[in-house]
Image (cartoon, rainbow, N blue to C red; front, side, top):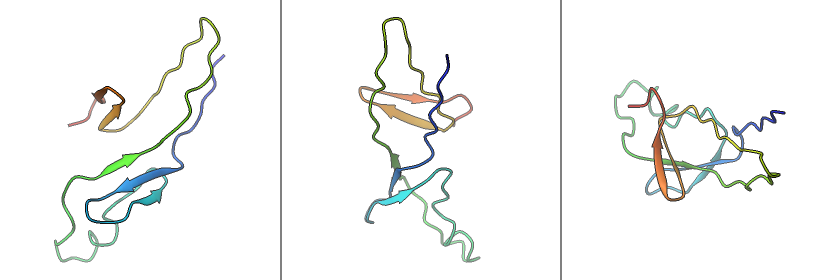
Length: 85
């Protein structure tokens, strides 16, 4: 039986030099400075992170994480999603 847990809530967004912010996904990090018409919106690398407990699995059960994003990291390895640049 499939059990789906939605992951859109309780993420942390961290832009260098600023305090990390709690966000929900989808999230637009340039929704203010990208709309002021000045072409001065911030460009750079930022991170989204989320901590979660590993589900308890019975023998023979499997857990899948389906992530529709560009690049993500699980401890020990990074992954690029299909369609990501």
